[in-house]
Image (cartoon, rainbow, N blue to C red; front, side, top):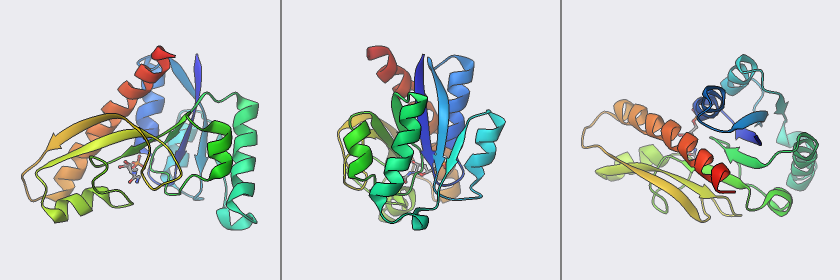
Length: 188
Ligand code: GAR
């Protein structure tokens, strides 16, 4: 059984999709750690619901990104984490984590990369007027939403209701993340 760490900064609906996928047996893995850089984020309530250990940290309390990441990597080492899944973790991963977990860190983004990277992928694509939206899962490198693409799914939408679009994209994210993690785990 593989051991996952999920990093999130906000609501954590992708965290929950992954934890639920593991609980149902759709993913042959266990979420052993939820890493969160925002005290009070809703993802922490979801982690409690699934009995997942949490590591909450305030980046400002560390002298450098390296120090914070070193503490996180030490905790992951002690828990035997195999795969790190970023799920709405709104920070660029630095050298320390890439050095210790490189090739084992993946991220989900709510757009068809390389189009519309950044924190507002859905809104940016909507305002641009695209007609085919989507979701991307990729390996993480030192760039913003960069790194080799693992999987993508298109979400065609020609309406004018961004909330409706967001709901469709989040649903696609939850399915794609669970499927992709299972595929990665079973191919190793
Ligand atoms: C998700 O839509 C995820 O793709 C996005 O943050 C959201 C988190 O939602 N990530 C990025 O935009 C990365 N650039 P969640 O907290 O409900 O999972």
